[in-house]
Length: 54
Image: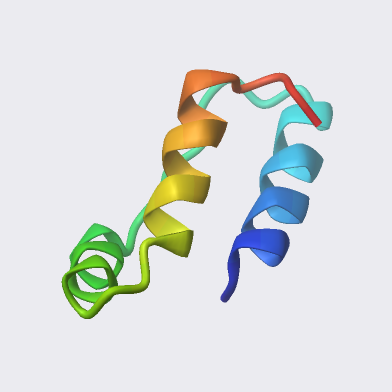
């Protein structure tokens, strides 16, 4: 998984009309951030803040 793939999957899910999207992996996102790689955590924050933006 990477930020681009997450965004593609998120966009597909939102276009499908489902009412709820479950995310998992927060432990990994935080672990990666602690190692200096915040890309996934930042992508998730952006998607949650702007859920319908493609």
